[in-house]
Image (cartoon, rainbow, N blue to C red):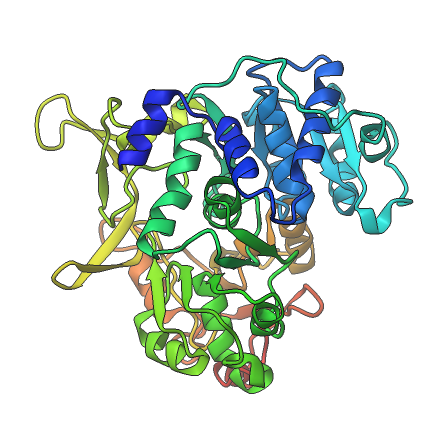
Length: 493
């Protein structure tokens, strides 16, 4: 905490700290400063000013972090847009953050094209990957990659340095329960997150971090990539997580630390027969960092992959409760206890609980339910509003929807098409249960508990259930055979 105090006192920003890190570890292979400087010079020439917001909509690549770092040199805020978003959710994410422009990778051009008519006043800058320099540029967009080549890589120093509590980034919530919210990441919070894990895991600048997580999320883009920006570690990125390449990647790049999430851990163990290989323990990884590893698989995981230490962290992107508390006390005087909230102040207010221990105090409501396993050992058991839990043998939570359709007019094909265009893949229900009437109690309350307990078990009720076939993307009847295949792990969820 002393470092955080010193950074605040000295007025340290991510940009000023990165300048020190780049100078201190200049012997390491890096090309980021040239990119970030070109970005800063270019967008200054385009007329963008301090405090304005530009969206970054791009898959993981080395240029990603240095793009927003370049905008930060100009004191422009970058909104890191989830690459899974499409249609209405994507357009909403741009509007809620007040984006004045969008930088998008050529791989995202179809998604941008679909909403182009809805955002006619927002300039679009297409950045082609070095692997696809000749990729066609979307109509009415600016070819950013070619224009950046004309800019100087000289240090950019024409803007007054930002302050520790100034907004650096917007990182969006997942949007599984509605439209995504743009959470505020200040300079000091960006510095704090990687430092906390770095200290807890006893890492050093010589460690090599394997980070296959998306850079638009806090875990991958701040906690993971931040190890390079804040602490000078080497970070190896992967565009998309691959179960079959996870440990071979870690071995190939000599990684000593790897990032993971519960989805990855469970995918590994549920797919052990498919992905088992010599690289399971032929690596140098000493610490694995993540959150949500279920107690049921913890021991199997560390034994199979020979991990000597698993470091679990807890925290919400927008929150201040990093130690496993349900409520996090808000204290504007302390950097670690501030609550910057969301771009939309109405959303911020909904997360604040007042007068908890004494009149006038403020707490951040995480919405998480914690379980104490023994003294000083806690884990998150779920969300306070969560209706569905893990599907047995599956690597993630499986969403399920119950639809009232007494007249049997539901068009599943149309439903599937609508869900694809409006929701990211992880937010779409995998199971659909058709009800002839609303299940109510004697006091006219919805029988949610019954629906939760019955789940997709076709033997517990007679209502038709449909399952989203991951190969076709269409809903098919959940027959006994399909149900058995799911339980045996023969069907991909």
